[in-house]
Length: 592
Image (cartoon, rainbow, N blue to C red; front, side):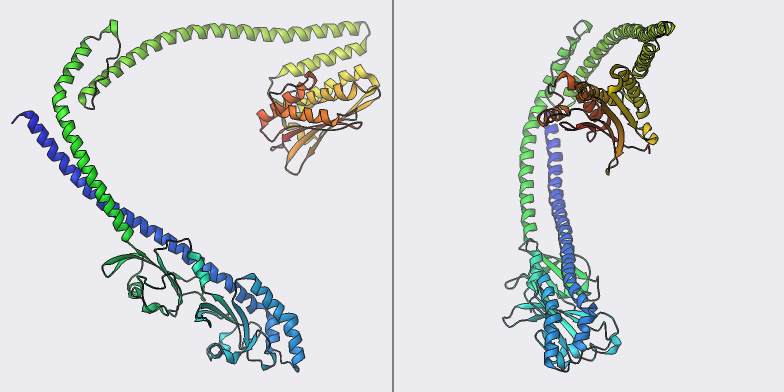
């Protein structure tokens, strides 16, 4: 027997054993996983349904608790009326409106009051003798004290439909009072809670005495039995034998049984909710998985046989091909070889060789690029040093020149123009002193005040200004020259076009959202509504072309949004003939 045949048979035996084992394990694991997932989903669904039933009953118990705490109602039920008109008046003036309001608040089939007070049997206030079970010794004894005594029960109405009844003893005002409130509602309100559940799932809800409140499988169901009591169901012994969700069997049919009991309050303690899910769907899905696994097994086996023959035949040929291609590669022809087809050691050797060649090529390129980068870095370093020297020389030259002009003016006695030159030098020093990022509001106000003093020399008595920003706010950060731009806009558009005097006010306000508003307002000519809308639109559209006289405002608005965030920026308010208000919205931060 040749080596090729031995290799083929050995590989075939290993693969068949492996595929058969995987098929079995996949089918077994798939069934267990689906059953576990189904149990988890059923448990979650039943727990949610149990909670919903508890909340639903609790909503009706709130009405009963309200009646239990209504002492005025209980006093009227116990009051001995001397005449029927007096009782009739109290009933229609006080009792009936209360009962009507309660009926409208919930889906209630009937709401009646029962009392042993013979002088107040009117309308929905009925004699206690009509329901003798309410007046037994245990329910009307003084030993009950002031504890709210409520119970749930099930009964059938005249048409045979189930009603869910809640009885509440009304003895909050008088401990020994033998009077009750009875709230009846259709049992179908519980069925509404499972409308969206799987229609193949049997849900049963029963009271502590075994009375059935809900059974969505009324006939021909796997839980067939006496619907009047939970003890008549075939799975009832299973509920008593053990706790937890589990699989049960009946007539060789498997069911997933889940059971929850409500114990949140005394009135609902012992109410049970049961779900019974047939596992036919699980069996069908398991068979489908088994069939798919067999098909995959046969397909994989067929592919393996063909691949094994091709691999055994072509292994030597591909090794020779790899050797020939490696011989053609040297340092003068350092290129990757063509890809060797396959997914074994032969193709891996070709892939590893190509990886080595690519790393060598990358290393040569990195050495070359590194040398070029080093030369370029040296050149940029020299340029940066020259630029730094130039930026140091230019402001120094400007300040020295301005100081020389100021000194010459002082020697000639021209103090007014000397003060203007001094303010101009101070303004340049403030503008060039720091970078173009954020500065404190105090520094920005210093720039603004210097600018306003210069403008005061220009406009003489036409310009009046005042700055009213509290000291604690001077530490707030603002973009440099932002406030100065707003003041410059007020000078150009508020002061220059107006022949008489103009007042510019700079003040601050903190709004209800904790934002700081720095306001620059003037009493100039104002902006027409159409032009005002155009300027506002231009502020928010960075790509829109505005007139040059408004580009400063847009730049400040965009800088505020970029440096401080989207909620912040410039707001414009104006009224023709009454002036313009520019509002710079800033974050207050932790500076006050």
